[in-house]
Structures are given as structure tokens and as C-alpha cells.
Image 1: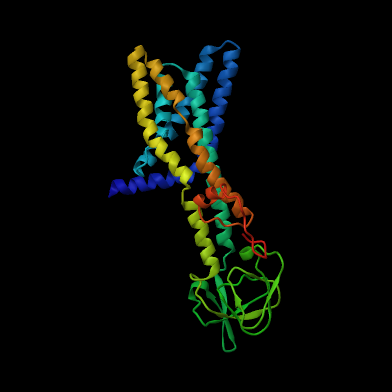
Image 2: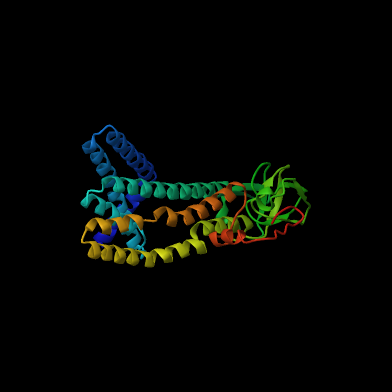
Length: 327
């Protein structure tokens, strides 16, 4: 139990530091590669090797953490090849190759993390827009209550500029609403007495009363938030395909490296195979593209259900729009 608690603390610590570690690692590895290149050009091979060794060692430590985290989740990917390549280049004194792999690995991870943070930021913005309180009227008394306390048939008051908290029907006057976040329609709409109003719409007119027809969890805006969360959590088919390739590519690369060593009698040949077989940017390209696409769509007010839906959109030849211009 103590070991499990320690692992959890370490994982949380690394997760909090990750936004800082990855960009710093890119700067350090690129700096080490560039400094070594300058030293090599002026004839200081010893200094060049030292810079390249430093860049490689800096990448080995976080790469080991990434591998351990992946193994704990039952995944075995090409990060193992990257670690073996980094260690191998140090052992056979191919320091420039190690520095190049370090830059490649750090850069790919930083891009992946940046795209994930962008999508997380957009999801937080969506959550922050969600109302947390509602004004409930009982007789002549109006009180502010937490949103999760709203029950069906409660009479709610929606003030000017406020977000409609739950789905309901207009009770007293014509409601003027901005429903662009729901429909994409930029024009304001009017909902007359008895007409339905969906949560997430913004009151663009005067205050009106609403009879709740659903709880907060069952309302429209809560469903949109759930879809956005699912979109960020699901993998697209192309990402799962890349994962499957990584699963068999690793043993194949190790087999070829061993064969090269046996055939040549030189460990340098084995390391060369591992260096060539380190396709981190290739396998990172799919998740980065998917997460970036979801993020960009979210900023434009488009909620895409999953990465698979976004990928399928690339195969579409016909787009059908309704009268408001919403796909």
C-alpha cells in the first residue's frame, strides 16, 4: 500500500512539472546540439562531444520516466527504442547521433503536450462558461441556489446577460436569446410563452421566468460538455493503428539490431539500426494532428464527438447544412 501511494505521489508530481519539463528539455537539447556543432566547427572536438553527451543524458532521464509510465498502463511503444538508442550512442561514442535523437524526442513530446494543453484549455473554457447557480422563485421570494439543486417544475428567473441554467419553457414574457453557442446561428431569436428554451443560451433581452423541464445533468449544455470531454479522451482509428504498429515494430527493430551486431561483429551497427528505427515524430504525428484538430474546432465553437469523427470528416465528399447553417 505504501508503494502504491508513493507511485501515485510521483506520478502527480511529474504531471504537475510536465508543462515545465518538456519545453525546458527542448531548449537544453537544442542548445547542447548547437553548442556542440559550433565547437566542432572551430576544431574543439572534445568540447563538442561533451555538449552532445550532455544533451543525450538530459533526454535519457525523462525518456525512462515516459517508458515506465507507458508500461504501467500496459503500453509498449517506440519510446523503448528511443531510450535504447540514446544509451547505445553513449556506449559506442556516437555522441552526435545521440544528441539528434534527444532533440527529436524532446521536440515531439513538447508538441504533443502543447496540443493536449490547448485542448484542455478549450475544455476548461467550456466548463467555466457553464452556469453554477440559478435563481429560483417560490411565491414572491427569489433565492440563489446551486445548479444541482434545481428540480423539474422549479420556477427560475433568468436575468439579462445570464446563461440559461437548465432546459425549460418560457413562463411570463417573450425571451430574447442568443443561441449561437448551441446552433451556430448568430442572430438573436425570440421564444414566446410556452416555447422551449435550452440551457447554454444567453439571455439577450430583459429578465424572464423559466419553468424547468430537466435537471442540470439532463440539460442540453451538460450534454455538450460531456461530448467535449469524450472527444478529448477518445483515440482516433489512426492513433490506435499507430499504436499497433509500435507494438510489433519494437521487437522487429530489436531483432534487426541483434542480427546486424552478429553479422558485423560491431555494436555500432546495432546502434545504427536502433537510431534509424526511432520513428517518434512519425508516431506522434497522428495524436498531435487529432488533438490539434479538436482544439481548433473547439475554438471555432464546433464540438466534435471524437477523434474518429474528425478523421472520418477527411473522407467526406458531401456536407449537408440545415437552414441555420449548422452541419
